[in-house]
Image (cartoon, rainbow, N blue to C red; front, top):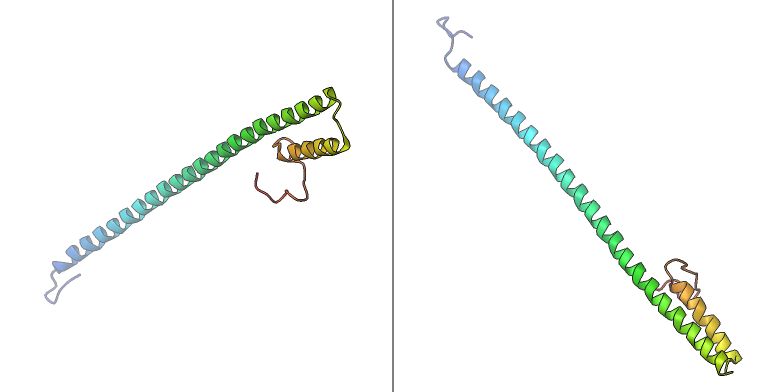
Length: 124
């Protein structure tokens, strides 16, 4: 670019240099933002995986506790039934209770999860 006297304007190379620096700075900012976005995505994916892992582990604990409790319930039912048979006390009321108790154990058992009309909406 020439001035009035035909000489090269001293501001032009400086302005061109500043524009180039600004473009480089903008590109560096863009790249930095892409890196931050990628790191944030990785962090969020890790967080989601960790939360899912923890949720699955808590479900495992819950199910194992329910299973152990179900085994205790079934053992109790069997002892009550055996005791009634041994003492000749197995009447219809106790037979009905045993049937009811076994159905509740099947409902509570995480391996069976039998449907129960009255309790199906209850969190186990």
